[in-house]
Length: 336
Ligand code: NAD
Ligand code: UDP
Image (cartoon, rainbow, N blue to C red; front, side, top):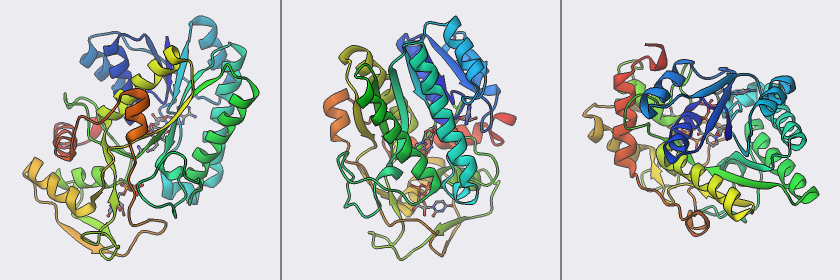
């Protein structure tokens, strides 16, 4: 059985579906600090399977130990974390505390129960911002926000653990910019409050919840002056996790890979593609750059192809169609 922490969140829920569809037994865990209980019913509806779930905090050793006592867990995918870059600058202690104490606590329980297969949700934000693009796994690391440093430190903690005991097998998955939703339109990204990320902001403009998009900077050194990122469909990302778990269990080796499309699109590219997919006009205004942003980054995605036989299946058009289907079917997210 595979344990997913942060299972009812955006990426966790899509991965949960993929694992069940692949035939894995899964137990989900979440404290609902950034997700809804309705996700579980939706997962059952999509997969037609029972979704085993426990409501708990990864910082709660007692609940985790109880879960490991009652279930034969062979691997863990650890999604549970706070993830808003801007908020992490305002509330660094909450971020270090939740993301690092959660990880340390979980690893302590895994060690006690001899479960050594672990997948970390890492991020492109661990690459030093001065690296040339595309980002390759061996490049120097560094970060620009407390959130980014929690991912950097999480990787370091796990590397030290591996060095202490060769039984540990860790997949360090560095995600680029996940967007899109399950094609059923039943699960998708449902941020609380004003979205920080581009795609949920765009979909909320399209559905009439926000008046217009603010584009942060029109004078970046990119093909059209707006910021360039590597958008990856959450369905492709979810499939990457299934491949990573297969790899840990079968190859019995650790790995560090980028999960990105390997292509960069600008904010205006995404807006145009979304307008075409949805038939909705997205009014926008170009405003000042957002502090901490960089012009452009995207992944070199060839190592994931080589090691996991994984590459993207969905393009930007599919990402926009699926994001729009989710948002238009659920204008208020899971709270409808
Ligand atoms: P999300 O907020 O939708 O999901 C995270 C889930 O973890 C939420 O359901 C939340 O309730 C839960 N959680 C948080 N702290 C917890 C705790 N202490 N105990 C139990 N549950 C807890 O975020 P997401 O976009 O699905 O991201 C999943 C992981 O991927 C995170 O670790 C995030 O840092 C990482 N990541 C996300 C992105 C992105 O752009 N979405 C990019 C790179 C990496
Ligand atoms: N962006 C924007 N307006 C928004 C949100 C984001 O112009 O309301 C831009 C942002 O400056 C960046 C790109 O969209 O160039 C992706 O931003 P996001 O926050 O989604 O991802 P990240 O910057 O963390 O990679």
